[in-house]
Length: 282
Image (cartoon, rainbow, N blue to C red; front, side, top):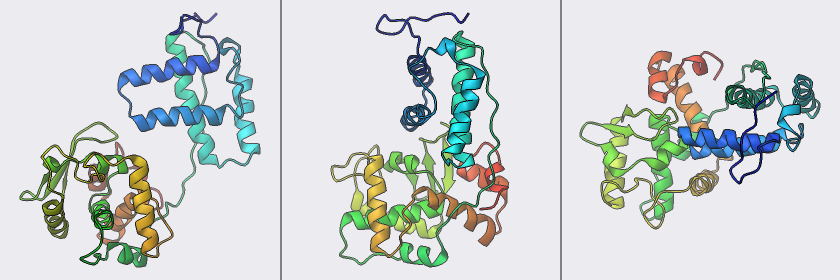
């Protein structure tokens, strides 16, 4: 019999939904990112379409989990999408085992290799072309961001958190203090990127701890604002693709294929724990 826990408001944490909330709280205490926490909520919502999350967590069986996976497949979810949900459910069950909520386990589903979509050279030529001198600040900022993404291959969350003090033009490098791995990274900047940032920062100004790519009030760009800004920018340049993360894939492809770089150096530059992302087609 799984031992009970007391829920925050005094009720017994009994349903899958309630126990999941406790799991999320424990992950919050560990310091996981806001994006990861949002993913937990979204993933629970998706899982709830195939598993009754208001039922007792004690009554959950292996067959229920198998039927959940079958339901996802029958509904046409891609193999890698199912694998993502199963991986999250497996992590939840492992936590439940540690905390005494259940004794179930779940095997991972092997993800299939996929070809990561990238921006073409023609699209990059349109996106990287310097805007006219009299363009507005948002257009100019987006151009600098796109160039920065193609120089560093960093994630959108990292871009949003860069401060003026993190840019060292003399040393030609940038310090990433906000990364997915939570490890500080120092990334080199090419000569052209240094020139772009020197001009941009002369216009941007601001204190050392001000955000480099700020909103109209000088604060941090929100995730939505950055995404919408790049979407509008790409569309104005005649490019239908609007994914920010696709710049990261494109950076990896250009580094390995066009520049003849090695996977181990790319692993360090992109902050991956293994070279696995670069041993599959990109």
